[in-house]
Amino acid sequence: MAAGGVISRPGGGGLDEIALIHRPAYDDWTLPKGKVDGEETLEQTCLREVEEETGLRCELVEPIGSTEYRDRKGRPKIVFYWLLRPLGGRFRPGEEVDELRWLTVEEALPVLTYERDRELLRRMAPATSGADG
Image (cartoon, rainbow, N blue to C red):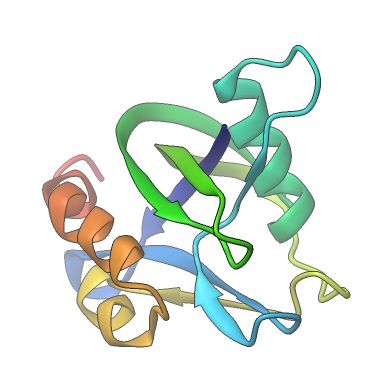
């Protein structure tokens, strides 16, 4: 089990921007996520992993779905995602994540490496339309 987040902030032109991360070990663009650690809840995992990978402290807004796939070793993996709002912090490049980009959902779709991430964004696009902000 794993959890991750779609960090959304107000962007220009009335459209929200979401954060994508680049992981040099996989040379991929994806959403921040990671495995449950010990007895933590999925929500706690989401917030911890997002902060570890992006440097951003966030708050949960709402659950937005899950993805299922097999990892590089062929093991089944389920990742539960939440829409997040950043509260503070700053991105610092590191070994695990070396770049963060803020893009609209439309801009993010062709950048994302995995179809499962694109499908998640397509399903939750109304939540990042900028209607609340």
